[in-house]
Image (cartoon, rainbow, N blue to C red):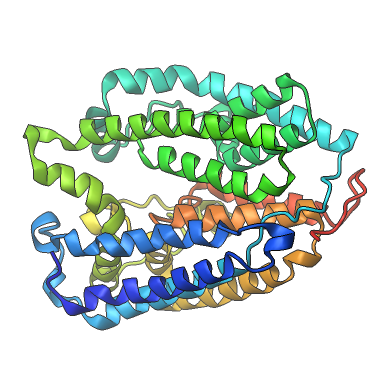
Length: 416
């Protein structure tokens, strides 16, 4: 339970944002309906902060120097995340009075996505089955201790895993296909492509894919809800309920396999409560103890490889592989200098773009909104786009974003 008064600091910061998000949810209700997009993002961090009180850092993380943590550690952690979360208050679902532009070009993009999604799903599925049969405990141990990977090292693997990173856009185009009344083949193909993300996650015995997928589907539903017919909403609610049950089962199964060692309640607590609430402790441990930084070799490998030879990063201390949100990864890249510079650049960029969303073309608005959500939702654990496939994903997404400044064969209308 709570042992230091300053553990409450994150709750105060994120509680303020929760209050503002609830207050703004009814703003412009005639045009947008109730807006729960900001609330969904901020609640992830608020829940994380609320569960801090149940963490026993000295007992659960004996290698951590928890007695040396200060209010300053928790204040820096909370302030930086507050700045990143603040732009979310200005996110809005698509307005009720717009019509999504349709064209042959958009249909071609969907077809290409479907073909790549089917490939990604089929390619990774046998390895996912193999990983399930091995068991998540054995698989994770082999990965952490020996660098083992079920997936072979090849360009096809890079392509298959890279396609999986677009799961949120597969979900978005699934909703677009419903709105534009595309054939069942389009809807089924896009939905299958989105599921490649879960299949990919199983090959690494990761649990977060179940969380991210469920929250992402919910976010997309809220984002497109004003354009969906009542009949479509009813069917989608059933689909969301079904997916929710399956995702909870998958999350629970992997958690049980990995943390029910010797039937220890303590292990289960670390693997469940600690999973979402360890972040400020890991961040504090990192800023207190880390002296050798990764300088981009861990989280920005594509970019560092362009400058010099890629260096293999070995993480041997528990805090190095524990969840401390994306700001912990930014600190590990280059200390406070990199963390503060990255925060300044990204926060200003996010705030500037989100305040102009209502003037943007729809697909440009969609790319930015979904990327910001993906960055922040994944970021509650770590900078998940910080690998080769994730770096490539960012570059491709930037290219598509810049392409929206051209007509692309569509007569796009603005956001509202």
